[in-house]
Image 1 (cartoon, rainbow, N blue to C red):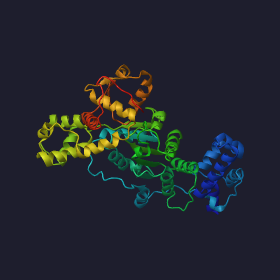
Image 2: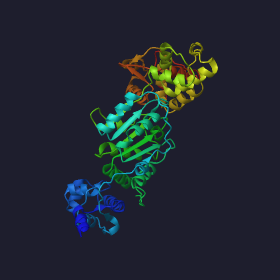
Image 3: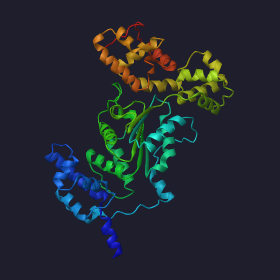
Image 4: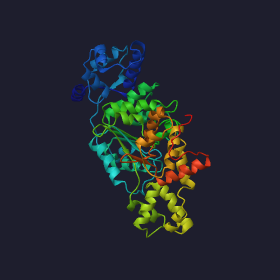
Length: 450
């Protein structure tokens, strides 16, 4: 009898099945009677006769409500409330170690047992996510700069602050429906659930878990869902749903965080982000001298001077992947002698060229032309020099847009309004220009057919 009173006092909550059932009915009614637009909380209140606070409480599925409330909600959408649609809320239990491990899914995350530097970046991201409760965070930077390793290291460092941790690579371009569906199944803690078919309902159910639990979801390799050969941030056909995911997570209040790692800064981060807002972005730049020395030492190159380190950092922008490739070549071909390597006057070769190929081939024709022009200018240029040297002034807005696009791809250096390319990038672009027979006047930015 005491147990019955306790249950009556706690009320009931919707099960995953019941919540999904409501979402499907709501979407059907929105299509039929609301021109496909989502019902606002006020509209749901008018339709059900429940106050907005009660509806929010029901959909959060954390605090119990009386059964009559659920009956009233379901009846408003022509649904019958069955026993499988609701349950009694259970008090929070202390999780065992095995339960915590089961709630952490690392997917194919890389091994970061050997990790160089990035303490400032890790602390910044940790503060944003744990202290400031940022709900949508992007780390972006040129290929090879270490975004993947950083995201894994960060997740390992802050995982105890979350009930669920999911790390996923999307380099094979899974659909957003697949990513959300598998996340929901993981959140459901092995319960058998029928996933909604529509993206709209999957997003609604996904958001429910982000509100009800403290979740950390990391998606790595976001650039693979963007269209190559177009201005930055244009989605490939069939992948536009990721934009809906990003906007939903960034705009809606919840207690979780979605972190994405990308070579290209998404447009949603730009429109929703800000220093004092719950949507933030961090550009990942090169390693510092001590970390570069550590990489060289790991390759057997010892007694490296600060000057040699700085020369490598300047040439390769402190890019850890490029530095590992170079260090291996210095050790194998020059017996560890950095001076002899630089005497060859070649910084772009082998895997470094392939790394830059991947980035350059994604550029639009206009972006490539700007890269050629900048590569021929040995000195940094100010923004007004673009307008002074362009052959068709009426194209200036497109040119400025392309410059911004290159910045979002982390291919341009901007030092107090002066734009330039890193030495290795400039050498690569000049090599490509000669191979492809692209010849222009140094002081003329020619806009072709793009």
